[in-house]
Image (cartoon, rainbow, N blue to C red; front, top):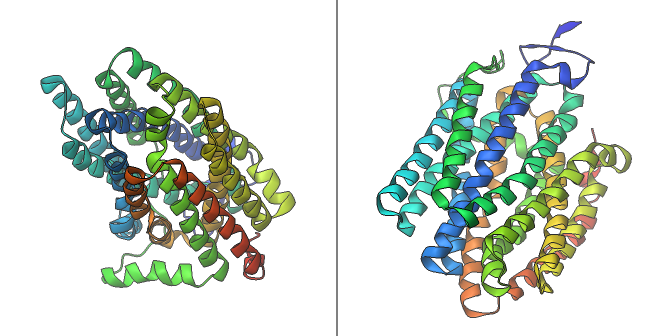
Length: 416
């Protein structure tokens, strides 16, 4: 029986399997295509920077640029998503990514190379568009599924995307090892073209019926902050993820350099290492809903913080790519579990007319210090052994775990 969902303004099949929801299925397929295209791009770009510079600082700078749009534009993008047509917003973002990738391919075809500053500028535009698409995507999910199916929906999306991530990095590494960056970027371009066509033809909801455009842009920006601060548990979890990101991105900024320059891993094995993180993500997405129901969100999050700590320690003692694969599995499992539970909780508690703003505000906060963590890791890596950075990140994870024990009472409200 079809029912009009409260606060959603669309019709879905209440109480039925999520696979009978055609709107969700359309979003799910689009996320798979997006994941394929994005993985090829994010393998090729750091390696292009490495070949040009052989510098930890240069590679960390690129990772900082990847995060920077979340800080300076995340909240603004959130307001625009809540104000305007979400479908057109996603199409515009995908179209921009198509233009950026095409431009890099043209430059490589004309000169067989591109300057590092050119990659930085194009990277900023690309990752800003990626943030816009992702934010609009997350704001649309609560419009097409029931509240009690959000964890399942996010788990399915994460499961499929991480399954893609097992295949895509390995294939991308093989393509780069066998052919060139240009061939890898062609795969990215084709993927985004298919994604554009799929979103264009999908009957996705534009926005909820109760969305009202405000005249005061500043007021709309503040509303996202006010809602996030109104829940002590949500606020504490957001701050927790901020520090998790600081630790993770400090090591992520130098991980490829450590793998290639210190341990001598080639592109083909590098793809397998990154795929190990995806395997961990698959395990997490398969069990996230089950362990959340059995143990509760706060207990699961404590466990995965410890798992991430052991992942960082494993990188610290690594002597070959096998250690790196184990470490990436642990980190992938931890990060994906945290993301599924946090995003589902935020979507469930946020009114649909505020989805974009709350998402943009939260993303800005959790990414706030990560560009500086990337840059700091790159600078430190120029003067000391890179392994020290992984040990420092493990210590940060341990401190986060201890802090969570002290805020136990505030976290008691996070189960829903």
